[in-house]
Amino acid sequence: MTDLFSKFDPLIAERQALLDTGVRDPFAIVMDKVLSPTQAIIKGKETILLGTYNYMGMTFDADVIAAGKKALDEFGSGTTGSRVLNGTYQGHKECEDALKDFYGTKHAMVFSTGYQANLGLMSTIAGKEDYIILDADSHASIYDGCALGNAQIVRFRHNSVEDLDKRLGRLPAEGGRLVVLEGVYSMLGDIAPLKDMVAVAKKHGAMIAVDEAHGMGFFGPNGRGVFEEAGVEDDVDFVIGTFSKSVGTVGGFIVSNHPKFEILRLVSRPYVFTASLPPSVVATAATSIRKLMHADEKRAHLWKNSRRLHQGLRDLGFDIATKEAESAIIAVLLPDQEKAVMTWQALLEQGVYVNMARPPATPAGMFLLRCSLCAEHTDEQVDLILQRFANAGRIAGVIPA
Ligand code: PMP
Image (cartoon, rainbow, N blue to C red; front, side):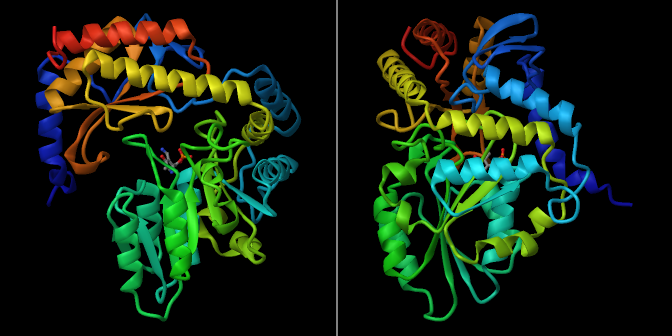
């Protein structure tokens, strides 16, 4: 009998070799206690969280928590069913209403995760005669949605308007076209040149979907995302998003003004064949989304944090993926896995938690320490983070002593 696990042997060996050097496992951190959006206890130590997607710091908002508790009391702990058959509660409607108000769209559809929202759109909207044109660095959920469907897939070079234009120009005249973009690319924290990309996609008669997972909450006058800031709201057909980042809970969604949008509720398998979100989750999401409509101060402070951290790390001599802070993600580039893990561990020992990211999640084989800022990080916390980065970088020998 062939052991079906033997295909993972190289990965198991690589992982073991890393752990044998005595480092902590970067992919198995446990938060024993969470004190606030920016602080947790990890292995008994109070630690600043700089590796969450809690951009707007909504997870401990008093109104959000109260809404969740009330829904738990009034509607119970779970729906036990799919939206289509037995899982649509009043709270799902209220959550979709909050999204329609937030985005100013006619339609909103809530999925159980953002991953499933991407699966649900990509696998359904484009059939085997159609084309999905996507950025090579697209999130796994976009790729997986394509794999679940039958459309023909065309990739273009990351953030290259020229390559997008060229690839669209080569497609046969027949068949529909969907261009899929992301507002913020989450590994490097860079943003898409959406104005130019949307213009090119329109020129070639394509529909456009933008994933705003990492842009919702703090880009654009209403916090809708990079597409709002770029002024292309009227030309984007679908916006996909998640509740797991700025909204501070879990869930996913698509919003659209397309007149036939609602039919997706019957044909999108990742919507139909899975249980809906628990009432407490949609209640927290709806409350959080409505509060994010009036969060200018938080948005301003998040941008301040992001710019300060970017500049501070550059001044220390770290290599950063973007020239300036383009989003709330600041990605520090490390030469190899050993240096990345050493710096990561030195940070953790001093009380700063960041994400270590490595291939295949990263583009071009990069090793990254990914920092994500929160609107609730104080100025003092950003100072402490910079001091601790200076120490960690020197210990690992990645910045001058
Ligand atoms: N799209 C992008 C760009 C993401 O980064 C993520 C999650 N990291 C998702 C979608 C999926 O979101 P969720 O966590 O809600 O499944």
